Image 1 (tube, rainbow over the protein chains, first blue to last red):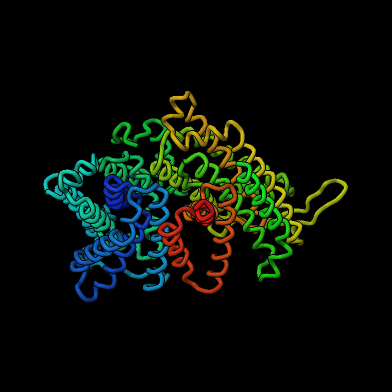
Image 2 (image 1 turned 45 degrees about the vertical axis):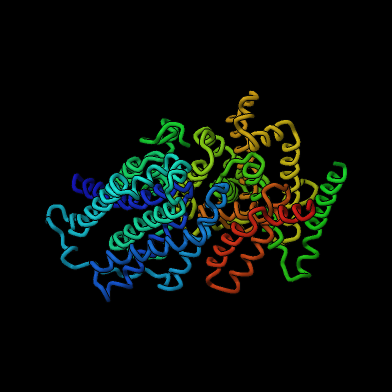
Length: 288
Length: 318
């Protein structure tokens, strides 16, 4: 029993790490540009599929590095061509625009790679269990947690110490002032969008090794990412991280005791948070 | 002002003439009566959403949840409780309305994107319940093994099941009641207050209007009519599946409202008509209809943000 609970907590932590990674990207874009990117799941799926296609040529490690970058470049282009046009307009329009993009993404991945699930090869030595007692501790799972941790630390380092990151944070607080101080806000938003999409692409490459490669993988991960943001608190990146891990573990634990509520439990958590603390766990007062 | 009023009345008359004659002119131009019923039902859903979206200025992206609750409520009543069409509609509508009334207090203080995110996420709860609770809801396969029943007035019965035209007029009567109620509400002082909140929430608050209460009421009213539409949708198909509750369905409602014109009463109906016909045509022509629907979303946002009626009105004003 203990083993089962531990297994599911660990599993939940991994899934939560994906939620968090995806939600961090969504949060970045939402905080700076006020756009909820429904197409984020589409970018995630694309990251996974690109990695699948690249592996025969560059191997797993090459794909892990290249695929998220390609996804991010597409993100930069889409921001430049489409998303930029709805900044400053009623949030309704950015929602609808990215909604439509999400449809297109899912359909195009289905068209290019087929609707059925594809096998995704990760290096064999990573798949071996590390311990006979705790069979679920495969190298790949630890590796995923490690990769997510590195990505998150990297993100916070970028935001905390680089010129770009400091500008992004400043822009989140007061974009107009940042613009007046001579920062090109258009480029800033563009790069920020790319950064967010990069995280989605990275999450995609890692996730497909665990969850399998299907066109609908993005659509199934996007809603929990919303919940992660709401639970953690809008406007707070550490909150988003915490929210993602929390709901992941919560649904992992629920799997043990009440399997049919695995998905529903995170929405119940969201309702509880909204009742007790409408701004979310680490959200700022009065921001939204 | 009087000319404006006259124009509005003429528009309403034309809409009703078209709707009343639909079973006669639609087949003549290549449609079928069920398609007409679908336009009316989804049009009602989009108009109900617009009560909140266009007239109260609150961005809900989760209306599919209440639409689906209405649909499941109606279907499950017919399957498990009583074989009565009218009772199934009442129970379906109540199910969605009560759920909205309970969820309302948790979300009415939120605004803008945050409201949209929370409503859409809440909708997913019901989706997963319908998806997972196989024994009762039929899970992914949907709720089957039931059908709409004849309408029994005591002195006469109307066969709704085998006559699409009779069912169409049945839907149209309920549509008339629902839209009549919405139009009446919007003309009332309550409706004017909603407009005031939409135009300037802060000023409305300073005038002493209990804004949150009004938004809650508008939310419940909107969800009530959308669940009515859901109940009718279930009866139309004699089938419900979890996709009626899925978040993409909410997006469809919003695009219908925007496409037709959010600032006009009949706009969402027009939007629903365009959307339904387009989807019907595309899904019969190509497997990749999802891409085209997505492209359609993008094009509407970029080129028709005011909707068809918004453009016509602007032309007329210029």
